[in-house]
Structure formats: C-alpha cells, structure tokens
Picture 1 (tube, rainbow, N blue to C red):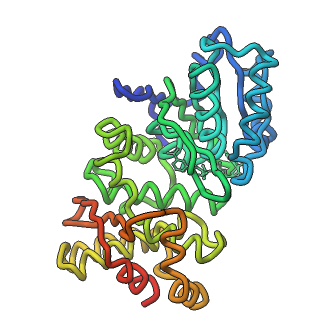
Picture 2 (tube, helix red, strand yellow):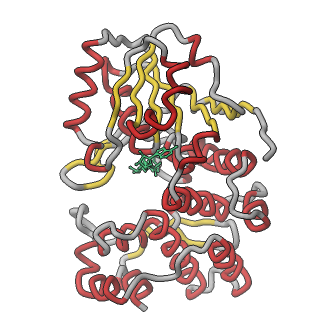
Length: 343
Ligand SMILES: NC(=O)c1ccc[n+]([C@@H]2O[C@H](COP(=O)([O-])OP(=O)(O)OC[C@H]3O[C@@H](n4cnc5c(N)ncnc54)[C@H](O)[C@@H]3O)[C@@H](O)[C@H]2O)c1
C-alpha cells in the first residue's frame, strides 16, 4: 500500500494531517488532556502511551447510550480535576461517538477550549471528525444536541483501521461511496476500480469532498445538506428496525431509493441510475429491507418519519438531478417515501 503524507488545509475549518504515522506535533503540545475510546486504548496502548505520557486521560466507553449529558458531566469533572483551561488542548481519540462527545465538551467547557481529533474508524476519518459538528443524544433522539466547532487539527493515521470489524468498515464504505456520488474528484472511479481496500488516496479524496461542502456551508443550511443523501430513507429504516440494521446498510438502501425516486421523476437516465447502483453492488450493499420491516413501515411510517418534528408534514429529500449532480427538495407527499421503501 502506498502511503502518502500530505496536509490538507482549509482555512475556515480544520487542518487535516494524513501521515504515515501518528503526527509527532501531538507530543510537542504543552498542556493537553485526552478523551479516549476504551477499546482503542486497550488495542493501541503501547503506541498511544508514547503520545500521552503523563498527560491526564479519560477512558470513555464508546456506546451510543453514553453519548449523553450524563457522560458530559463526568468529563467536565475530569476537566476540573485536571485544571483544564481554554489554552489546554483537548484531544479525542476514537470513532465518531468519541469524537462527537469530545468536540461537544471542548466547545462548551469554559466557552471553548482548543480541540484536536484523532479518528480511529474509517467513518470517523472521512466523516465524523471532519466538518466541525459535535453531537449528543438526548431523550433517545440521536444527535439532538450539538454545536458547530471545527477541531484545529484532525490527525489521520490509517494504522488504526486494521482492527476494525467488518460492520464498522461497511459503515465507512457507505459514507465514502455516498460522497463519491455527490461530487466528481475522481473518487467514484477509484472506488469502482478498487478492490475494497481502504487506501490513503480514497481517504484523502473522501475528506476533500466533505470539507469542500462544509467549507461552503459550515452551519448546514444549504450545500452541506447534500451530505444527507440517502439519510431520510435511512432514518426511517433504522427506526423501523429498532436499529438492528446498521447505519451504513440503511444509508446504502436510502441512496438506492433516492436514485429510484429521481429516476421515476425523470431526473436521471437509466444509465445514470445503473451507475449509482453498480457501485453499491460492488461493495455488497443491500437493496431493500426484510418483509417484517416493510410491514412496520407500512403500518407506522408516518409516525416514524415525524417522531421528532412538531410542524409541517414535509420531508427533505436529497435527490439526483444527473450523475454527481445533487439537489435538495422538500416534498409534502411523504407517502411516496413510504411506498418506495415498502415496494
Ligand atoms: N459529527 C459528525 O459530523 C458525524 C458524522 C457521522 C457520524 N457521526 C457519529 O459517529 C458515530 C458513529 O461513529 P463510528 O462508526 O466511527 O464508530 P463508533 O465510535 O460508534 O465506534 C464503533 C466501535 O468501534 C470501536 N473502535 C473504534 N476504533 C476502533 C479501532 N481502530 N479498532 C477497533 N475498534 C475500534 C469502538 O470502541 C466501538 O465499539 C455516531 O454516533 C454518529 O452519530 C458524527
């Protein structure tokens, strides 16, 4: 595998450092504390201890039901015990759950401390740690609390990927395929011709697309919404399956449904429709959900779609208006979404 070392700098957001090893600049930081995914620490203790040395560390049990205010309170106590000030660099090491909660605590403690992130999952490297969103789950609603707070630096070290489970790889692949369908920077071709191996070029190109959209629209009010491709369908599928279907698989089905919707509305050609599906086929991503989940969506789809929305029964769909040409459209006929998934 060819390793490249490159710094991608985008002025308004973070500096992303892709390195063949962990970036030594971490060692040189004067005052720092670490929030680390417990599993990652166990797997990479020897390597990480060389960067952590005597600095305080908080070991975090990275589960969705710990991405909460209760856990934030524990982290704030850890900050107080260790005299964290606005000058302290808070460093989050782990997958998206860990980087989301780290970014939230860093953005709110003392009205904002310095923040650096070291994502350790494929999804974290190309998505969760990029673009400056922090998030917490609240009262069972995912990511309902959060801030916009780009890390000053994101360190990408692909060595962490070797211990990922197949499920976590798949979650990352789906988001990677998704961005290749949003913008043309050669990523689609790399993925299409690739052999399911995560290469530094793939990681770099996926990051470039996400950063480009976030730089144009940090606060998620227009361009950035394109990144929700497949997600309206996916949220419905995930809720109906009570989260037994992984986010990656749900998004993949969602992308196929967005393509089908676009094709039915004559927004893409048959050839373009096939190009989208062929890429997902190559990565063995599913087409549809089980009959049992379809039944549930038929019965309570409306309730599931609007569970956390109070007004205006409309859904925002991210659709194809050509290959790698994305539009965001609000529709009131949400039954179409339900029919597409259950057909
Ligand atoms: N802020 C954003 O813009 C954004 C974007 C996408 C997703 N997210 C969030 O990211 C979260 C999902 O993150 P994720 O899929 O990266 O993983 P995760 O944090 O859910 O971790 C998945 C599992 O992998 C383990 N793990 C992490 N790194 C590992 C490694 N190198 N080797 C072996 N095991 C490892 C973790 O301990 C955990 O058990 C969700 O909470 C989602 O809401 C945030």
